[in-house]
Length: 201
Image (cartoon, helix red, strand yellow):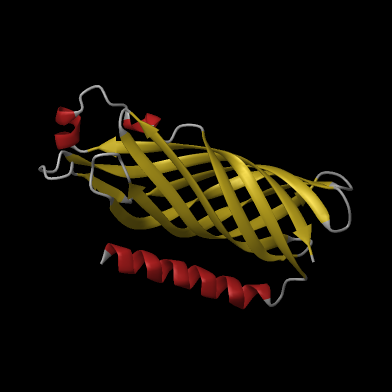
């Protein structure tokens, strides 16, 4: 049920974006690269079985690639984002994938520079793919805020530096092959600093 509710929320975000982008002026696409750090909560069982494990270190300042597509005008922009990050620590490996619908407002601070700030809503997919353990995947909501600065290079091209913070609830189990479950992990939040290259069509 949690997966279905998350997917329905993402579809609602997409529908809202499509409805509002009809009023926007220009289509744009972006490539992003940054660093993501996650806060991961261990279950009591996993805490007892892996006493020294710092779950927050599994995805900690890991490289993140992403793509975006949306529409923008002088006041703001609507866009969809897909990005992913993965990491491992002490034999545990996680992968986080985000599909987000976002809206930003612009605040010009010069002829070619503007600040932006906005909100995002969508779905996070969390995958546990640790060596020696059965693979497990879960979907959860993703909701958060982002902000940063955009520098226009040409009429169609710009670069931006941004920061995004998301809350989530995706959870995965850790079960060694042919052995009982040793616990579970839940993604509570993620923070990303990123650079983006934008091109307006």
